[in-house]
Amino acid sequence: MCAIAGIYSSSESFEVLTGMLAKMQTRGPDASYTYQDFGFYAGMNRLSINDVERGVQPFKNYDESIIVLFNGEIYNYPQLKTELESDGIIFKTHCDGEILPYLFAKYGVNCWGKLDGMFGICIYDKNKQQIILARDIMGEKPLYYTKTPNSFAFSTLIAPLCLRDSVINARAIWDFLTFGFIPEHQTIFENIQALPKGTYGIYDINKSDFFIQSFIKQTQQHFIVEFENTDASLLHTTRQIVQESVFDRLLSDVKIGAFLSGGLDSSIVACLAKQRQGVLETFNIAFADNVDPYCGFADESEFAQIVAKDIGSNHHEVRVDSQNYQNYLEDFIASIDQPYGAISGIGIKIIARFARELGIKVLLSGDGADEMFGGYAWYPKLQFNDPRYITQEKPKGWHYYAFESEKRTFLSKNIFSVGEKYFESLHYFPTSSLPLDSIQFDRNFYLPFEMMTKLDRMTMSESVEGRACFVSPKIFTFTQQLDYPTLVRHGTKWLLRESFRDMLPQKIVTREKHGFNPPIDYWLHHTWRPLLLEAFAPQSALNKLGILSANIEQNFMPLFDKSERRFGNIAFFLIVLNLWLEQHIKI
Image (cartoon, rainbow, N blue to C red; front, side, top):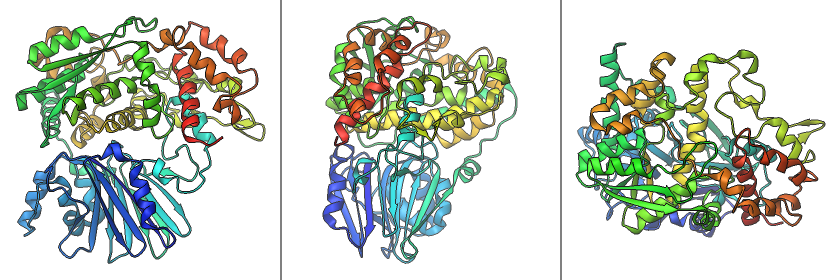
């Protein structure tokens, strides 16, 4: 796991590259490597996971015409390595990334569909004078780029690409207040874009153009899962591919731990990991101020302890309260790269730091199971969708984010409108009333932009690699073939519950879904309220930049103080945006 960066320009220097890498030190504190060739400067920071001693990048093919810089993990690299060895390739290490230049030499851009992994990859083809970027199909690993008529630059994070004065993207802020994240491929800056998940991009040095192509269909074809439409076949296939995914994600030469909330998903991951490797460290957040007026409770530590005792893991409970979270807020803002408002990310960061202090460099996660196997509480209710109301303010499931009409009351029209018309975010949502379309929306939108972003940024900011076990290509391909009744049979995640019922404590199998929800509404109405008022103060970054409307408190606080629905998340988004602007923008 690493961070990569590069720039092609006749006017830049090697020092620019070193400055880019310096901004991503926590993602790769173990080593730093660079490469340069006729105006192309590239490098990487390494977090050593596989072949700790010999994983020196860039990786090269025999004649060194193909140069590879790699961030991520290729979990099926043993099989691909065996295939390449049968072609006569001799490898010098057991690093997964060493296969990439040879795989590209053999298959060209068709190689991406053969990879089961999370990755952001740069290939420099010296013969063709091309820079090729590729990113995994679920968007687990980030990769950004910026282009001018005379230059091209890429990076794992956004911050290293701010080589010139970058202009804030007002549409991104408008969308951020809707979702709590910035939908790709846009970013907080107008001149920097995200390479879309499941695509590769080719920058032709001689022509100065950049072409992007998806490889998701090729991945699905390569990892096709065959099954019969019977309960027995569905359950057998589910257990087989989930078990395979977890086992593959144990690939490591360093110690591995696991997040364990006590929910179904993380419990399955922890159970399988403990079964395979014998010793496992598990980690859980416990909330001291266990109050949430909307979810009833926030503390799941009791269930995590049940699972840990059942499987015999070495369990670590990190007890926190509102003050602990507030103490981490500045670090959280410094770690998110661009405005990002999932407060649960602070808990991920706390656990990652605690795990790293114990020598753990890899943490397994159950993220992705809800989207893939139908786990959210509102999924069974989607069958009652009324087409007349799908696009009015929000579809089902998006119940605690800012409505368009609300944003128009507390955001400045001067910033967030074209002429007399405000921006809008509703175009992202499906207009279809079909339940499966709503679930597919979550898989393509919420999962990569919120869940995968959270896991990557929070773990890597603490020099820990987070691995999501439910987003493998086989699980993705398999669940794409499931119909809505199968996903919501007997409520939620029927397939996962029944497939692993024999391995888990009964209390875990039968308990209702509960997200990792810090009691943000309670905190913001009590100890955190001053943070919100600071964001509204005349000297705040939000006001200095003209982002907020006049009389913001009078417009916002009545909405915030209503109890009909959760508004704490929206308030937290404003706090995050204000603090991020203060940290990153010169005012």
